[in-house]
Image (cartoon, rainbow, N blue to C red; front, side, top):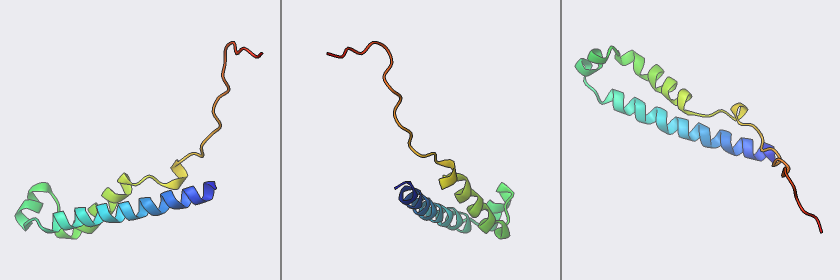
Length: 80
């Protein structure tokens, strides 16, 4: 079951990363050369910056821990 959850999270993360990468790339590409140079970015940097932004925003499946069992109740529990 955990493998399917990890696969789902990985796919969701991949597609979310691709959407973000595309948005960043489109947004930077729409700027003029002057605006890009004011930010210290060249046109050749756009793909790299978009890829880095998407990589930072995506949670990788290796970073997700499997759900653990709930801790047992502590304290006095009455039994009849």
